[in-house]
Structures are given as C-alpha cells and as structure tokens.
Length: 178
Image 1 (tube, rainbow, N blue to C red):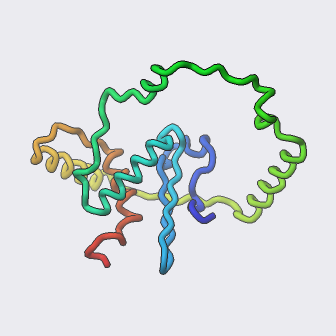
Image 2: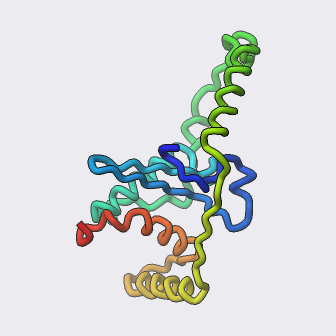
Image 3: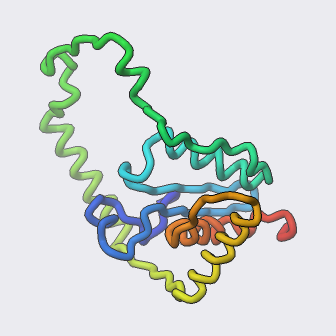
C-alpha cells in the first residue's frame, strides 16, 4: 500500500484496541518526491479537521507557527446550515440505484477485495514504548515554556505523545538536517 503502513488499522474495531495510536502518519521518500499518508478514524478528524491539521503542519515546517489560528471555544460548524432553508430530499428509489448495487457490482467488489487481501498479506503490529519518566519530563518542559510565555494553557500527556509522533516522521525535514 502506497500511503499506509502495514500496521495501520483499517476498521474502527482495530482503532479501539487499547494502545493503538489514533493518528497514523506514513512517510514514503523517493529521490524526487515525498508521499505522506495520514490515517485517522472519522471520530478524530473530518475533512475540515484534516485540512486544518495539514495547514498547521505546513506552517510549522515553514517556521510560521504564529500564523496558525487558535480554535474558537464556541465554534458551531452547523450554524450556517441551520440558518438556511431545508430542501426536501428526493425519495430513495429515485437516486439512480446508488444505494442498491447490482449483483454483478457486489461480486466484482468482493473479488477485488479478496485479491487485495491476498496481495497485502497479514498485518503486523509495531509497538512504540515511551517511558513514563521521559513523558513527565517533556510535559514539565512544555508547561514551563508556556508559563514563561505567560500562557495559562495546559499540556496533557496526549499532547506530548502527539508531538512526538509528529516529530519522528518529519525529523529529516529540519533545516539543519539538510
């Protein structure tokens, strides 16, 4: 698979296994291009959230951390939808059969699924062990840096782990590394 690592969960049940990271980043580097695959359940990110994450990541890589807008606490994504007039939907049977695939379509999908599973082989898990002492030290460093800036924000263990997960695949993109 081009944009997903072997150990990446494919179904929600696999994401819910204790110890499974919610966000998976897969970086594939060639001489002339770099491909980045992000895998996350819809519970973590929708399309707008993934776009915001990619914009923030790009800004961070470019050194423009101040250009990342803070997320408002009272954001209502459905406010514009609720203000508009509801449009009556068409009956289900008039949607051109999109929800009713034919027997041939179902068989074709199952055949492709079977051959893809045979080609990919069994999945393998990768574990990343992070000592609690190291995590507590990083968290204390982040909190002291925020306090020095005059911020009252709180940094949780998940924030430190997410930053660590983001740092690992982007380490080679540093300016002093090139």
